[in-house]
Image 1 (cartoon, helix red, strand yellow):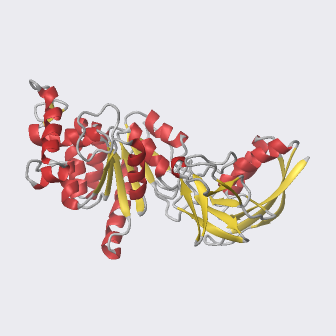
Image 2 (cartoon, rainbow, N blue to C red):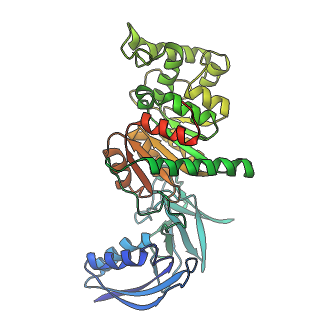
Image 3 (tube, rainbow, N blue to C red):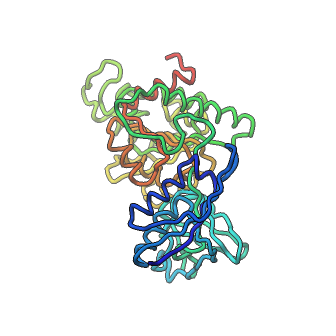
Length: 412
């Protein structure tokens, strides 16, 4: 038998971390011995466990250690992490460590140091002067960068149950089309109000991020979302060309993809309206200029411009135009989205599969996230991709936004 002793530290009892680690060991074919367990006596106290793991082969033992590392398992005999220089620009060493979106530390010269801005599916690069560690996309690595390899000298901090027992109590979120939504939306509104109050008291530090698709316009959620933005509850907007184009089409023509939002039917030559809208904005030079000139008077884009919301419009291969602000290089769009993430304390992903998954991939696990889509496959896919902190709501975007706006004080 091959063995390894690991330790767990933190709120490992009430957050069910210890139970998950032991279950994983057995499920993968190993055995364990709890050589030491110290349990905190009060809610704020931490607990400690030392576990000896045994497996019939070295390969199985490594599989077990890999599987329990995201739960905060650390080898008892601590070692520094290993680093290998990147062989070329955009190329990582063969055994590079692939990150999770959990808070992470590496051990360097006997000391544990924080890795900046957690994000899944990146690598860790160490800078020695001054000493720092940060996560980096594969395409951004430069030849000679010191890339962390293997799994020794790395520890992650699993999510722990928060003191508040609202819908964002971690490890409780499930996707269901049959559960009532009202209490979930009320909890979301409560968080948004708290963030708005905190921004007023701290000069604008925490942010709410909204990522959305054009179905918001088609389904009738435009007015509610515009009110939410105008009221100061949204601070970052991720979307594509379509949401912005159809929002301004509604302002200029009263249609969305040629379908009248007022009389509920297609109008003659309505299929041209979004193209004419895009052309008009391109002529003016920007969405901001279209709003400031008075051409676009109301709606989501107008509210964003007036409230100074940071907008990142990421393009796709199917875009018409596109609008001037749309970033057509997907790597640059990803970088722009990544740069807007710091400070986000709540993310709402509504009616957009592509933007929901892309945003979920960028967010640290500590950011409470709500994914809303009429298709249950979308929040399920987000969860399967690793965004296990996301609460999934299976409902249409218009109903969600209107109910959320009313919880925030909208009278519409």
